[in-house]
Image (cartoon, rainbow, N blue to C red):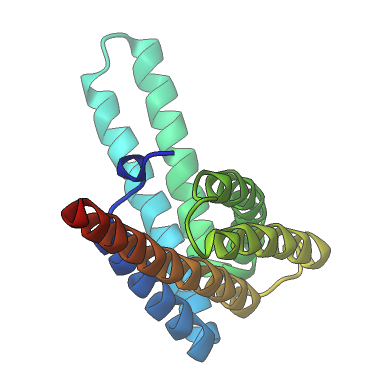
Length: 186
């Protein structure tokens, strides 16, 4: 496999560092982070619902207007419900995260195989396996997992994604440097 098909080491390194820092922050303050995430989801739902209702004013037919207003009201209503009942939001978020971790874990495993010639590729493979494990842990705790549990699990996932990206970036950089030196020695 050609090295040029892989992302640059600088981008991998920056992303890895950012994910590692965010993961550490979530683990240090899981309760506050979990509550903040649920409030953010509620706010996004309310804004999306209101935007949907405002968009209905541009609808061509009365049926389109009615459906857009109804869907917007439902989405905004769910946002308000989640804001005032964070436990509901936590259960919803937990269900979404289970799906995310399962899909993300499979993606990491497949992607790690692309990096196979690079030193440290197995770190990304391990990260994928951990993501699948986290999906399983959420499944066992759902729907009673609190916001802090979600924050801890997301923090762990960010760490086990960020650290392998840093290791891979170092491997890509080392391999690129050695290939450049080999080319200059010709």
